[in-house]
View 1 (cartoon, one colour):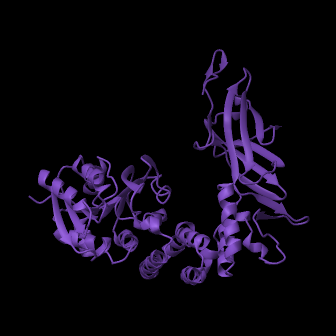
View 2: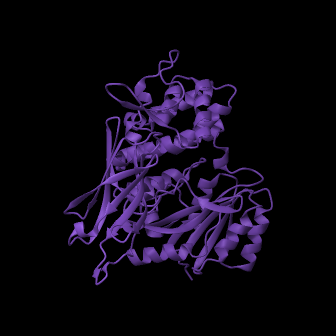
Length: 479
């Protein structure tokens, strides 16, 4: 019988983890699968574990090759695959029980070429959100494409997916040799697919190893590892330049957000930094001028120091970033004309003479506006909220609030309460026949004006006010 799904699992010296991985595959609610275990020259007890599973469950088969790396091992597994659909799992990770049933079911329903889902990170036995994937699957969508949902440029792993086997073969997809063999393939598949299904469920648990030999991605600051990552970046950029140039800015921005960290970490720990600096310059030469210029201000400062070979200063800035844990400040400077700069080391340092535009953070300013409570007083509704500028440690000078139903705007009288608190009263009789209202805010400080909608609490959606119906006792007080 031909299985519905083939799962290719390369393994090499992962005795401490492979049992949990294979148990998770055996427990899949989609039972019509085959699991092709590719022994990539293991020298520990991994092979014995694989043989035990194959002896107990005929769906598990073992293929052997000399140690060539994960890319060639996956290719070898694909050659033995018989399923209508194709999936990959790393032997130190875990696949949730319903993952393949969900992904295969989506493809069967929509006819898309691949289906992908959210990823959890296994850290010290706890499941956390994968920071690489966290922005991707917040809004699931079927039958979409990376050119329409460009956030998929962040989805550059192969194991949180199921592929239609006919699509894989039609496009001639294959893994290159090397460490980061999955990144080019994941991007090629997204671009070449006719349509893609995005599901919001977590379909893969990606492990950060706790003991024993660290994984390839955890040895990411080693020079050989950095060269391999650069090769993967070049391969992806060359493909995108030819097939999907509109995705280049998004890919470059991701490199500057995620991959560049490993270069920084290498420069922080190296004794002889010359070779790493040469490699860093090669990395930056690959990226577009636009991506480098539009990076966040603190990242631009780090890149500026790398370009000038100022390793000691880079180390100080990296320590500064870690100490602030993402809460660095933006400050206004100037008397007649106010500019907004990151409050970072070396601003207007006479020795270094770093241009002010490196610190320019105006585009990073964001309005924080929320409603914390809405209470009926017997005559009106009393709104209590918060208005501030993210990363600006100053009280907003002027705040205006108004309710809007899409046609009318009803201004509210605002009273300040503390440093960032605001209070406003709403008389429902002023709202007339309008049913659903949103609260809009305008905030001003030192000539900077930002507008937006108030949110419901810290992380909720846009706050909405529904006019209650009338009763014999007056306006109903509950919402």
